[in-house]
Image (cartoon, rainbow over all chains, first blue to last red; front, top):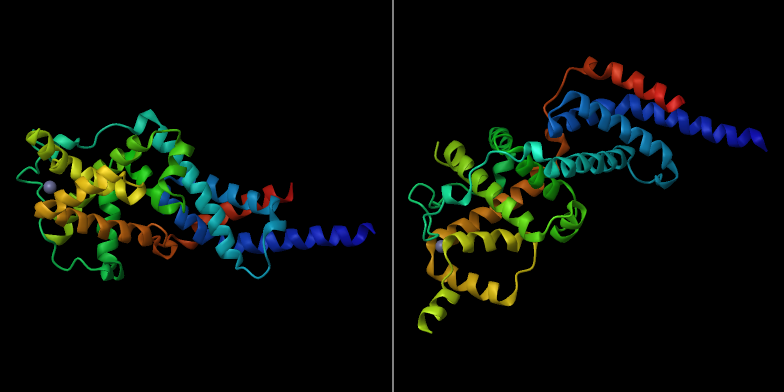
Length: 194
Length: 91
Ligand SMILES: [Zn+2]
């Protein structure tokens, strides 16, 4: 009876190794692109494979291993962003609301939203637009871009994210409000009004 | 009284744009929804903001998920990492 069990384990081992060989590179590229740090990206990929190995029985044969691994990796990445939003070290910088609104709360002359030309949803087909978007995200204070990425990378709704972060909904959307104002302005200057 | 009514209906743009963002992630209360709707009927700038904020929301949802978009790295950059992970898995 012992022999088949051993074989199952050996098979699982071989399968994991082949996944490591096949997918480490693209997983690392993605993690590095997201977290912009070599050591963190390596840790995230490594932790992903260790978690995957431990929960291999939850992997269904009909799903694609790559899809499954990337969903685990995305969980690890959002965990990383969660820590980053809460880290006091990255909570510096970034323009406050007074930068955009006058003391009556009206749009300031330089920040009043102008119509964008070509603001359609096909923008993502253009690699230059994606680069501009990435560059504008990088210019945000660390905790703001982490909050945005946390929101858009995880499938969770605002309420769940706030529970995870243990912050109030108003703290969360006010942070995203400032982040979006800055991101909007950056895209207006560097893309729509070039 | 009249002033209070105007203040209730006519939000500042600062508050209105905040509610536009809040609405993307949370449910607005009924007074908030009424206030925002009134503000938007009166304010072109915030209507433009709402449209653009919605576009950004849509673009970010798709862009932030798309792992085919990561810039390529040299293939040998991860050779050591692969070996390291395989060693860990064997233990
Ligand atoms: Zn307004």
